[in-house]
Length: 156
Image (cartoon, rainbow, N blue to C red; front, side, top):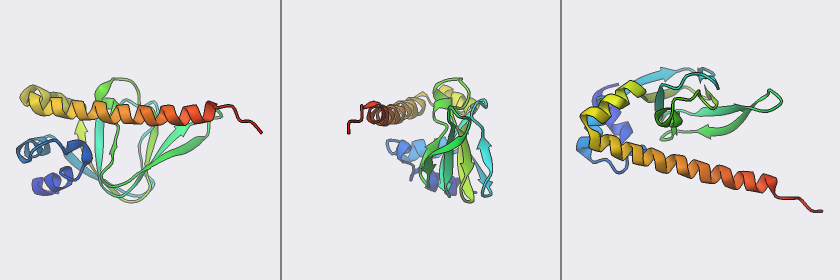
């Protein structure tokens, strides 16, 4: 994948909507791309998280181990979505397992590359961190709503 192709994918990812053309081009130099076949585990729940990714093509399944030890699909992520965002915010192990549902092309930003981007282009790093915080907040709000629905007493 050429740098121009990476840029063309980055501009389609909502988390980067607030970056201008110059900033997207700078970001592209810190991003790598990888292709994966169907049914490949990208990482397991509990693994070290050292990157976050952006789906350029294909779909992924996010699996979470239940209290009964069974892996349950909790989300399907398609083109344009991100994964592994929490790896940029903390150094805790991965909170879920991610498996390719189809052939997938991912753009990846490793933590070391992100740290270097923040050192060399602080304004871009701040914008990305702000968007990550917004995205994680949105996920937390959705999860809180789902939890409230499950905890609501059921009356017959």
